[in-house]
Length: 457
Image (cartoon, rainbow, N blue to C red):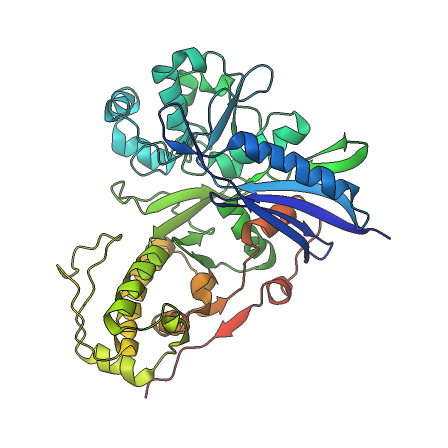
């Protein structure tokens, strides 16, 4: 008998993944691919959207024919800050513009002249300073910099919803993509911001539906439930929200370390100059306060320098365990030693100064300094909210020093780590499932581990 499964396309900037999950949300199949970037009309690197669309169809057609699996549902998880603009025939009008593509400052100045004051606007929309990273501004840019293209737009679809559209032909919007620092949403009014209506952009933004919405349709002769897609960060948060019945914060670590506070009473940051406090939305439209730190990127840079300084192999740092005596020795007369390359901190040294004779000592110093920055990011995200549980997933969840230092400094909190390698893909599967998650879900599916602070000698 065929195994009943849910299919998920999980589209990152680099890896494009396809998963099948069984009825217990266990992974039973996975494949992935990478595409070389192409360039837009300005020569700026961008996603190869035609190749991506072709791969989606090919992979899904093959899996539908597989004798082993019975696909009941499909959903899509992708990175945010990206629109696909389609014409009346449903064909893309533009490349999938890269959210790091530069935008001319005059356009931003003109925007704030119309819809400012700047500080008030950024507070209302939960954004830091505006750029192409705010996908709503991309619409404004198209309207005033490429009006001949803008006039042809029938719908502008966030990337997760475009992938759903490829399979359904039904244009829709949903909360997690709208709430992903787009500058489109007024968090106070819980509706599109007034500027969206003033510019008539609401006419090309499809109807908003719940992220849990699915469309039952006949696809190639097979009855399948097709989801509307979900923003990847919100998808990664979903299994925690669904299975934990108490307030918590989640620290998702990787190149960026992002702290999520889904239970905040103050979602909008007071300081609009703080570019590292951003907002997301849960699938029901509720705001999620988030802070970000370029932790993994800085870690990679500094560890490479330590490897070269001490003449050790690139994997040496992975085998360094926390040493209580080294920690207390460093903290006795603590002085910062590292000059960060990709993180801005006011009190860092003008250049890195290593006085230790052993890699292990210098590595402890590095982790103490990085975790200090992480502490600040976590505290800023939690604020005054009553949160006593902290979950860590991603690459640093297996770093012994990172976890022991966090558990030490957050002694009053219950700290847990999870192996959420499936992250956003599993969240996308859960979002269109009617199945309830119980309190054992993280333990059974995410290798949940409890951590206690080390004993001070």
